[in-house]
Length: 118
Image 1 (cartoon, helix red, strand yellow):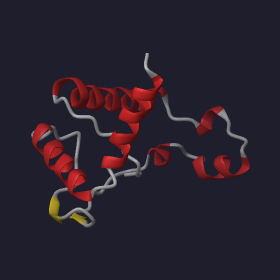
Image 2 (image 1 turned 30 degrees about the vertical axis):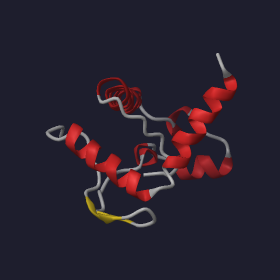
Image 3 (image 1 turned 180 degrees about the vertical axis):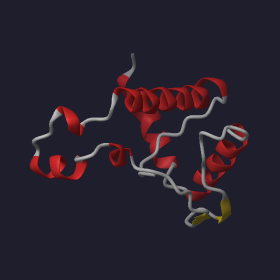
Image 4 (image 1 turned 90 degrees about the horizontal axis):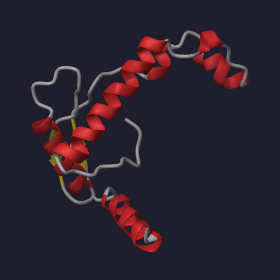
């Protein structure tokens, strides 16, 4: 393991994402690679250059919306078992994320690690 080389590669991967033209290209690739998969949705690129990206808005749900007392337990720091995702929802979130990530990395040969939420 070459830590210096690994850190340089990681740094390059992350800094590339500050270029919005590359982010736009990745969105175009995601839309192409996941087309026909109704369970996944990505914004559509309207226009872009290196410093500006305009895209469509994709409606969705926050994971926290599936936990009844998320906001109050987060603020108090005293969560209970009822303040957690149900096993079914947790399994769906983890398995969907894992499937998407592995497809992107292993099948599509694309590395995209977001610096931003959403």
